[in-house]
Image (cartoon, rainbow, N blue to C red; front, side, top):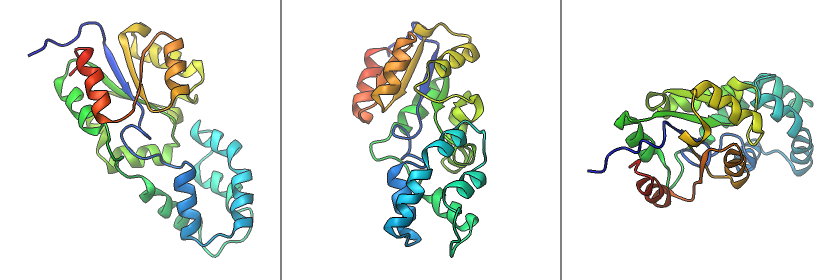
Length: 210
């Protein structure tokens, strides 16, 4: 049996694209628009309004209800904000070829501090943590909605390191987006771009983590 790597103290996972599907990305939005039979003009208007409030939403500067008020309910709708949000939540699913099994294995070893470093609204982050039981594997949750910062901003990685109390080279960070792993690597973290369960398992075995 390989002894645990002493090179690293903490392992941080992204959530959307690594453990689960994204919470409210373009695919999820398109599915919900179709569910409510929104026309092309409505969708175009909603998408044009989406970026700035969504940035504020993931920083927890506005609530999901306030986001919907600005982005969707700027015009009368034949459905309510509650109905809309109830259609958003089920879009979160276990990702095919997910790293959930690896997360559980790493956490069960007790050899490293295990956490998430993700961009997500408070509403969806907390729903996903509870609904999929992710919280039981985690020592800490470094979500944008708690930190007020978003990947790939350098400040979010620096804040994560401050909270962990680790040097950057002692932290493994796993994310599916190259922009996010590049930003983490620029801060000195050992960044891994997730490309499937087998690839990640092989990489972590090579590092002496699995």
